[in-house]
Amino acid sequence: MQWRAILLFGAPGSGKGTQGKILGTIPGFCHLSCGDVFRGMDLRTKVGQAFLQYSSAGKLVPDDVTVDLWRQHMANMVTLGKFKPEIDHLVLDGIPRNVEQAKLLKADIKVEALFHLVCHDRAKLEERLKRRALRDNRLDDASDKVIHDRLETYKKETKPVLDYYGEKLVKEIDAEQFPYEVTRDILSQVQATKAERKNRKLAEVVA
Ligand code: ADP
Image (cartoon, rainbow, N blue to C red; front, side, top):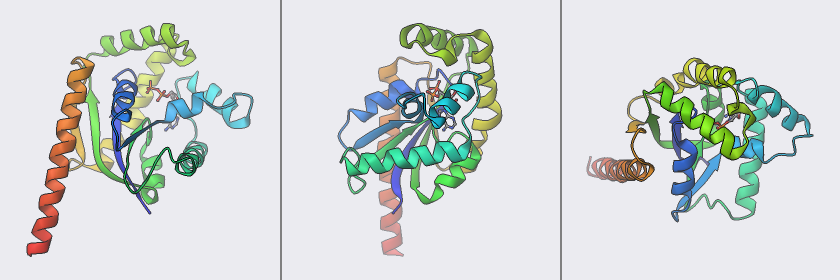
């Protein structure tokens, strides 16, 4: 069974985590941040060590390790009843983070929409990351060099995911607004996407 999924997408600092947390409080949405799964691990384990090594250098953790961990985490969420595939939409933030991961997840998720949180102002992204480093004690946001490398990794490896899913699924959202305005725009797009799907189904029945 493929799980219905909505993807939150954007550069580090664009607000995926903030939006994911807000959406996750709405019944019927289940939010999962891949970065949070990594951060919640025992950092003495092999995977934990790999995470520390890659994230503190602004790089992505290797795909097989990431997808295995994600699958294990999802299986636990289903077992614990935190994610109910029959009724919930999965809101994924931070995964897939490159085209290879998108291909690996093809069997697991049916992507209904990808929300691209667009922030053209690089200085704003950097400022948000620095604020977060102080607040959340995050090693990967702590230095200018790592922030720079994370933004470069995003441009080179993550952005191509937009082309992979294509313009039918990609919805651009202005991420420079207040958080509640970003949430409002995402939800109105969710509503529009739902209506489109319903109309398409109706058209198929009539044809
Ligand atoms: P941000 O919200 O700033 O984009 P995350 O919390 O999502 O950051 O991720 C922090 C770090 O965790 C990344 O820089 C990367 O090293 C690692 N990571 C998170 N998700 C993935 C993923 N899907 N694939 C590989 N590495 C990941």
